[in-house]
Structures are given as C-alpha cells and as structure tokens.
Length: 252
Ligand SMILES: Nc1ncnc2c1ncn2[C@@H]1O[C@H](COP(=O)(O)OP(=O)(O)OP(=O)(O)O)[C@@H](O)[C@H]1O
Ligand SMILES: [Mg+2]
Image 1 (spheres, rainbow, N blue to C red):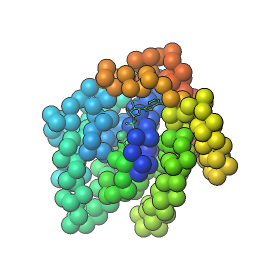
Image 2: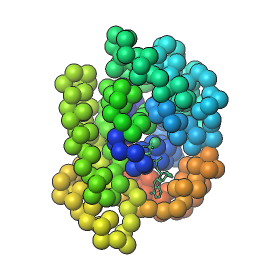
Image 3: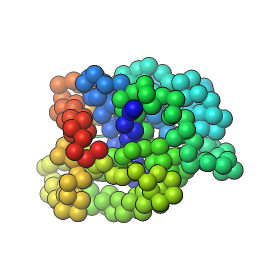
Image 4: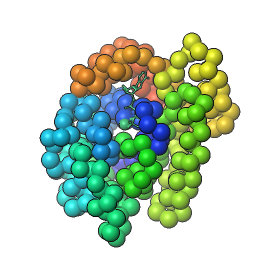
C-alpha cells in the first residue's frame, strides 16, 4: 500500500508544487513508483511536466465530480501524474450537494493505492474543499514554508484545519514534516526564520533546507524537474536529501 502525502500550505508561492514534483522525482530515482496528483485549478504541477491544463480532458475534475476512474487522467512523465484543468475551479460548487464530498479523492485513490509506493498530492493555496479532500485522503502532510516571519503565522490556521479533519474525517492525518524553502542564508532574516521554526516546531522541521536559487524558475519552462534540468545542482541534492528523510520514516 502506498504512503499518501499531501503538500499543503494555504499561503501561496511557498513551493508546494515545486516540492511535489521534485520530491516525487527524487523518489523515482530511488526506484519507487510515484503518482503525483494535481488538485490545484491553477494546474502548475500539470504544466511543470509539459502538459497544458487548458487542453487535457478528462482531468481530476471528472474524477472528483463524476467519479470516473483516476487511471483515465494519469499521464506518464517523470512521475505518473493525475492532471488538473481549469474546470477544477468549479469542483467546490459541483461537489457541494454531493454526499461524502470530502471523501471524493480518498475514494478515487482506492483503485491505485496498491500500484504506487508514494502518492503525492499538490494542493491549492487555500483551505477549501479541494485541500480538505487531499487531507482526508492522506496519511501525512508536508508543509513547505518560506523562510520569512510572516509565512510562519499561517501554520496555526493549517493546524486548526487538520484538527477538524482528524475529528471528522481522517483520524490518522498529521503533519509529517515542515520544509523550509527559498532560504537565503546571506540574510539575517532568513536564518532567524529557520531558528524560530525549529524552536517552535522542533523535530517536525526537516533537516533539509531548500535554498533560494534561480534554477527553480528555469526548470518548469523546460517542462522538467530540477533533478532532470540540473541534476548536480544544490537544489537537486536538497530534494534527494528530503527524499531520504521521508524514506527513513522518522517523521512520516
Ligand atoms: N528554492 C527556490 N528558490 C527559488 N525559487 C523557487 C524555489 N522553490 C520554488 N521557487 C519558485 O517560486 C515560485 C512558487 O513556487 P511553487 O509554484 O512551487 O509554489 P506553490 O506553493 O505551489 O504556489 P501556489 O500556492 O501558487 O500553488 C515558482 O516560480 C517556483 O519556480
Ligand atoms: Mg502550486
């Protein structure tokens, strides 16, 4: 059975999508079968593998709302990828009257859980129904945070949402790890943010810190991960290190 991990943080632009893809590819390098799921109507994970969310059909919308087989929306790329399209933005509304609407993803995954070692779910920057579906389907959550004071404040809200999901939908889901991203070690601010993070969350914070680098802006343009685009880079190594931490299972 696969381990299902959601990448979540309601703050935008903290590297949820970047981490979903690059952690996934690092696990594939290690010989594991990985499925990525794009639960974001922005479709950034879908785009990052050279697919166009405006053209793919069917997509996760049809899986969640119409209950079609998730295998019909999976494309084989660096990782296997269940794609998003813009109509996913209407999934909240379309699901609102459906009984068991929070469990649509969890149900969809049942048919593929024995085919993958890891299922990584990329979520949108909100705590709406798509993210709730991801948390309900997951064993653990990885929370990427940008190394800035303001980013740290959003964690309390995420934890409250997780508490509600645990009480009502999925008692097992927990924060498996907090990943500091876009770290600029040249600034006092960046280093202080990491100190605060470690003081507040202790062992929950991964040892791996992903530094800020321009390479991350370049890789998606090529429709590839940082591991394929710049395999020897510090950035690629950081995601391999993260994969090792996930695999040794201390936290997740
Ligand atoms: N370590 C890094 N250094 C520099 N840029 C990065 C790094 N990680 C990610 N980025 C860039 O920051 C931007 C935001 O990253 P990403 O899309 O992964 O965030 P996100 O949390 O998924 O955003 P959203 O909330 O909109 O879904 C992207 O342009 C990405 O290429
Ligand atoms: Mg994203």
